[in-house]
Length: 447
Image (tube, rainbow, N blue to C red; front, side):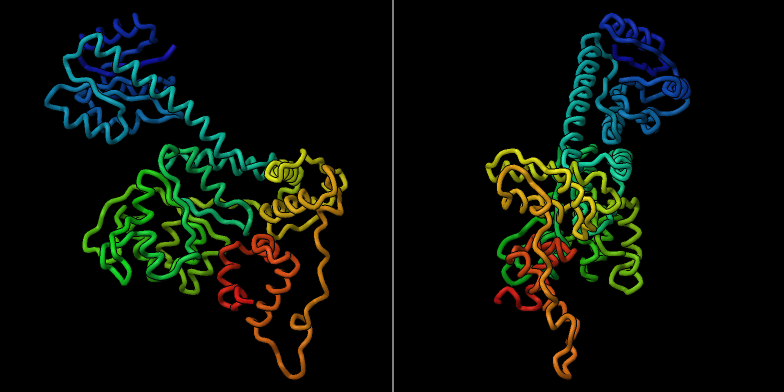
């Protein structure tokens, strides 16, 4: 039975609501002022609150934030006389579900109340579904993962900017998606963008859009990803790679909710929650002048650290079995069995590439295993080759530069991984985008 609170200083309205809603099967409590409403909501949870705008001690709109508390919060319907319709609409923008204009009939009352409660039930069902979808890929029952999910549960309902930190391959985008789908924006777009994949004007245009003729090749106007994410979530991965010249524009978007397209003369308002991620210590970027300090504090309103795999080794078995089933399904093979010895070997590894590296290892094992049993030999991977001379010794008087050493090391890892970029990135402890940038820098793509 749904519980309803009626807040109105007119005895006749209270009596009408109580009679009609009680006959409809609801549990009803009535009060005549804002103070009474706050006392009632402190005692118990209500599914719906009918609140008059004109109360003797406080107007209903300013009371709204104190009524919309709890998890989930009640649906709030405002009761208003005709001259206050504009105020009621303002209240709806602040979270009220609907309004009833005085005088109203019993049929109108029943219809508005039943519709609001039905919408709430659908929202809760949708919320549970999206939360299951959001957490579906966040596998693990270790204390570290339980704490991570508890933090997401607390943070997801808010619109606060979140900075997700953690080593490469730990699943920072999964956390960002969980924050989106477990929150009130779940029905709107989740828009990811890698700040390290584009540079200069391209990234500026990608984020903020551009007007026609803004630069060479801008034959038509383009809306940016901030506009695409309006009402939803914009996920800025590798935020530490954001060029210094774009940081003031991002800061303004975070502070004022306004963006200006490249080449544009006027700003436009957007409502996108921003979640950023980094595998670099941003405090060092601030000290070195690569990141504005005011932007850092705007991004890190809430910081969530994703634990590395080495800190939750008890989850490795669950993850390995999950990845094995997924890989077998893609390869159209039978469900594989991982031996205890193979699991022990996996749990003993350092996993510098974290969950991504483990997934790549299991996928390789599923493909290369002789049957449906995965043993130690299948997950041990290729043996490291002898060190390249360029990495350990110097030829004659030549001392290799750091760039030469890095280029040689990347070539060696690519060779070990049969030129598979995803596996090489995981072994190097960097993400795929960073690897591609290094390949272009060192001219390895053409090799």
